[in-house]
Image (spheres, protein in one colour):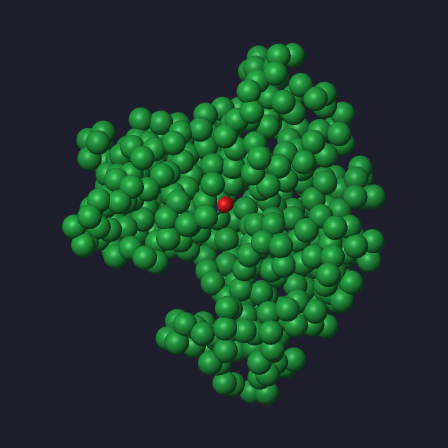
Length: 428
Ligand code: GLU
């Protein structure tokens, strides 16, 4: 095989980690190196220049990317993030993870991801709107309801999607067709309320199913949740509804812990009103640190904040028997190995946080059919899909890969599906 020149993203550590995971999955599946070589590069990586006029009258230029990793299973799908440290390598890695996540979810999408290198907190609402519209206009000919369907990610939200949708609708002049170009839109313009709760709901569903198979059910089990944003809040709400006792939740201000259980609605109210969950005052609540939360004597742990929080430094002290990864990449490979040996089940991120993109698919289908679905129907569908997918991965893990953590089985299933589609289409 001829060497291709090193690409712009190849030295990036996040990208290298994604490639390492791909190589491990390929090894389990007995796939040759040449297939890894095909899969480790995105099909297309677009870079765009976004000059905007700041409120102070000056022009400032930002860079943005959209990585289209693989389309064997369908149009590219994945979010767009705004962060000052976004790199093309990170965007490519994340687009590869979307390929696996969507494949594992059994939804008809390939993987994509986008990002703009910007600190959104330094921009006014008007500047953010100009940035978002210009970015979307710049990538407009590479995306579309049948080609590539973005969604929110870090520091983007339904308002960002509204600007994207509007910009695209103006460019192509077909407003109802344009609904399908982005998901997680506001409900007034083609979105579903169910999408707001869906990532947290999905992480809770994964924890519920894991509890059934690993620790005798969810009822009466104690739960600690790191991160009380969109994912953590709805995971807490649904787990409590199903009879679990949420004893601790946290945000950047710290964690609240009450062994008798937190009043989740009250914590959500406190968070919405004061932005700090540590202002919660009910019962015998104690303030602890985010690190202490991870080591609490609980049955279930949900890391729903950020990456690399469960490491070889604290893995030994973790007492939970089930971990459902709401965040992307919260557990390092070394920590996963330690926990696996201790008999802890870790539901991997590509399975546990797939509720968001799965609901995106439901929203997209709903848009294409003119909008007939209710939120109850949408959530019921998500429950059915996630329950089926969890149990499928669990069974395959136990049957073929039980000497490895559950993530190995998830990756094997996901990569295998993509490779089979590529073979059927005659790509390899
Ligand atoms: N950004 C989310 C993820 O990483 C959602 C993607 C989507 O809905 O397309 O899964």
